[in-house]
Length: 142
Image (cartoon, rainbow, N blue to C red):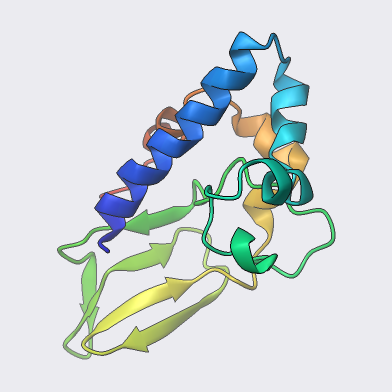
C-alpha cells in the first residue's frame, strides 16, 4: 500500500471516530483520552492492524494514537530524494528514528521515536481534523 493510500484511508477512519465522539459531546481532552492505546484496542480494534495483536508501534507506557503518523513525517510515493541511487520515500523532519532499505527504496522507521504519542504534543497540535493537522505541518509532499 502506498503512503498516500494509507494516509487517505487512515484520515477517514480517524474522522469517523472523532465525529462519533463530537456527537457524544466529548471535550478536546476526552477525545484525546479516548485515543489512548488500551482504550482503542478495546473499542476501535479496526483502527490499526497492530491492535489485533495487542501490540504497540512504540515501546512506551502511555501511548496515545491520536497523531498516528507524526507531523514531522514526510513522504512522497514518487520519492523525496535519492541516496546512492536508491529512492527515498519517507523521512523525519527532526531526524528521529532510522532509515531502512527495503528492496530498491528507503523508508523512515519511526519506531524508536515517541514524540507524537504524548498528550502534551497532541494538545499542542490538536484539531478535530487529523488530515488538517498533517497538512498544516506539511506531512505529505515537501
